[in-house]
Length: 278
Length: 324
Image 1 (tube, chains in turn yellow, orange):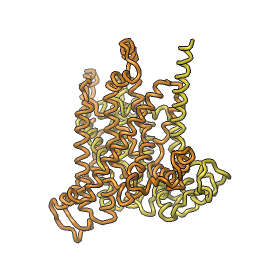
Image 2 (cartoon, chains in turn green, red):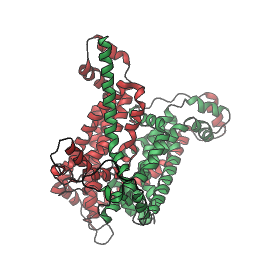
Image 3 (cartoon, chains in turn yellow, orange):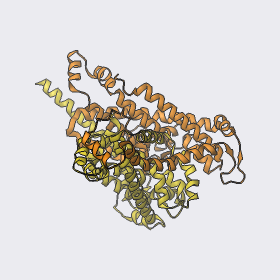
Image 4 (cartoon, one colour):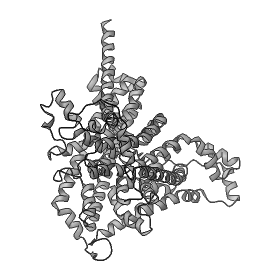
């Protein structure tokens, strides 16, 4: 009996520890969100309080009325969408070539993708400024999306290759026997099978671009400025204007958090698949 | 997202299974591309884009590293290896390299220890803790810029909530006792906190997946032999997790060494360069001091060292293909 009790207590303690860890971990972002709903003055009150004394949307209004802020949201969305579409269009056939046909170009591409991951972003970003400038793409969402493709594409190839790995080759063979061309087989038969993996990869590609900062800093100035840059500019221009800053940061995090929650289980599968397989 | 981007380790390619003869005959009869030709065609667009967007910039970087002066044509002159000499001997750059190493060690060690502890905890609690696991994952989706600003906000000297809470629980006598971001001795640790906060989840996730892949009967056998607690961890769990730990360490090590945005936002490398890592130094050499030659040479060296270290790490710790 006392043995059972000891086991219960031990499990209880483990649960308590897990809840404590998660709470501690959730605190910083929770504090950001709570601060965004405080009146601007209270946001930087000394001493600081955790909970808002009064609830207010002023910070959101102030943040959204800043020049360039709404435009930056439009830029962030369009850049991330272009980068995602481009990465997926290039990565799907490449990943299939790598997993299904074990081609030499495919292997070189895998190795190259790994190399890209080693390169410090500044090393690619600085020369890219000149290169994109030469073709007239500086300070455009397209130019920035191209730069961010250097991150999203290798990531997409690796992730998709892991997902394609699980597709039995008999599926393609059956389609070919039924008279499909190879490309049609890929498009109409294989892709629907891995649609979950494609969705997860697309979300990762989107988030890679959505959260990206360095290329945006180097390659945009006014017209194509994305929200991370707008958030960063907030503090240098207006000093410690924390209230509106927390509001903008909260708003900016909403799409990423929503996407993640929607596809939570698949994303976990994708993340661990990408890292553990092999 | 770049920091948490998962990358699978290279697989060892298995031999392609022979295709049914009927399919092969038919495709030949129609005069279609060979499999190899078709595969190349599929992979080519991605290869071309990566060559244009990564290969070309890197070649340009290597070329720029041999010139001095402004990058815009006039005033540019061939310098041979002078920029490399500068990069290797400049005390600022050397100090930044040392800080980058220290920063990487701090981040990766903290993440491995915390990540393993939380992974073991979740593994022990099983599927019933799924909600907690999900909540633990959310920082992975938060933009590094937001994380950097957020932690700066949390740690602002004497008005930040961190010091306020530490004072309330009695760790600090006064919220002004610790200046996280303006004390040169502390700042490298302070700027590492957001990175640790952001990506311990990734470490946990990877290790958790690794733990689940360990067959339970191995634990049974070890328990029968009398192994308990820590002993079980050291003699059974850790050796079996080794490949997973290695991959996670390499991925996170590479990312931590490249850290840029989180630090830029928090301190811009200050005070007195005490938190300036190599990526920041390169950026400043280029943008603020307008010295593209030295910036290019430093980046090139940085990249070569990263690749060498990663290669050695892959070959010695991970040992693909070899069972430990």
